[in-house]
Length: 314
Image 1 (tube, helix red, strand yellow):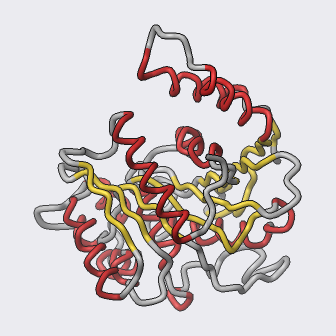
Image 2 (tube, helix red, strand yellow; image 1 turned 90 degrees about the vertical axis):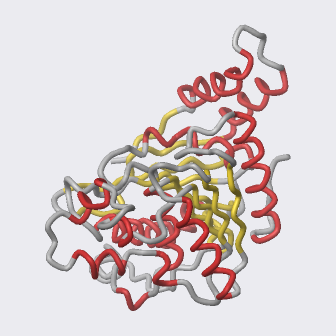
């Protein structure tokens, strides 16, 4: 069941975000006007089921321009949480910069380790992408301007979602594609990937000095965990012809090694894939300051303008 609501709660959150740098001060009228404009021009559909697996309904939210008559550039967002926790609801704030640009946002949840081990989350990502493809006309998704993004584990899912090859077989169980319903066998192409400190080498996090408990938990006691970790690592699929990638990563990140961002950049460079690495000096695992985020989003907007060719609102 879907549910349509107003953006009142999102507007309140946006207002607090806009006011946070200057607590106690009056909100600038232009900020307030933009918040009201966003609230007045977007529709929201919550908890649309895009697949069911392990007796668990995988859901997504759609935030799109109201009364849009032409296809809109669309960003698909995947939340973080080390494949073990986190919610799509907590990722709503990440939609605001794209709403400001006039984009449609698809906010996706996926199976956690407690529901299903790796590579289930990647399967869900591919099925969510296929759902967007199937419903492009209904929701005015512009498939030629489709961007994937996410932070941490969500950054990994954005990377693997846009880089995975068809022969990997991780979207064979998508409803309406390989089973009953309208068939969609189109290659899943995206225009760009915005990777916020995502994991590019999952296998590295299973053992050795960069071992991370969340990666171990995602694989559990799978007997073929090394093969699966390689299968779901974006670095496995680096090749020419990939969509442009912009990576944001703090060089003091204690959770996802900054060296993974460097290795990804070098591999993409070698393959001739347009990419950019935005390094936050002394930056940790997210939690960047307002000024840092303004700088980061300026780089993202410029990157998308170059490679996707649309900025939307100024």
